[in-house]
Length: 136
Image 1 (cartoon, one colour):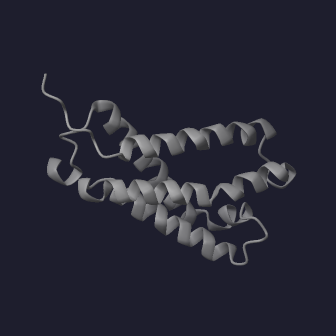
Image 2 (cartoon, one colour):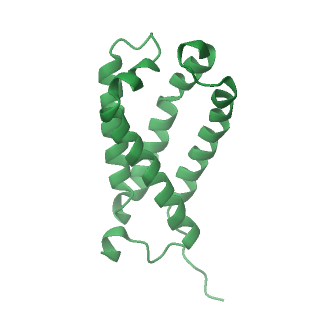
C-alpha cells in the first residue's frame, strides 16, 4: 500500500498538502455529479454546453484526484489539476460579476479568488518532484 501511495520520500507537510488537494478535487468531482444542476448555474453563458462542461470537469477532477495517489502519476495529475483550476476560473469571475444570481455573499466571492491562488500554489508545491536529499 505504501508503494502505491508512494509517500516514503515525502515530508509530512507535503503529504498533508496532497491529502488536502485530493479531498478538494475528489469531493468537488463528486459534487459535479451529485449537484449537476447547481454546478451548471455558475457556468458562464458564453459556454454553449454547461451540462457537458460540468460533467467533463467533474470527470477530470476525479481522475486528477486518483492520479495524486500514485507516485508515478502524481506530477502529471498535479499539472492537470493546476490547468483545470485555471480553466474553471471564468466561473468565479462570472459569479463575481453577477452576485445576485447566486445568493452567495459578495465578500465570499472576493475571498474565493485568493483561495484559488493558494490552491494553485498548493497543487504546484505538493505535487512537485521531491528534491533528492543531500548528504551532509
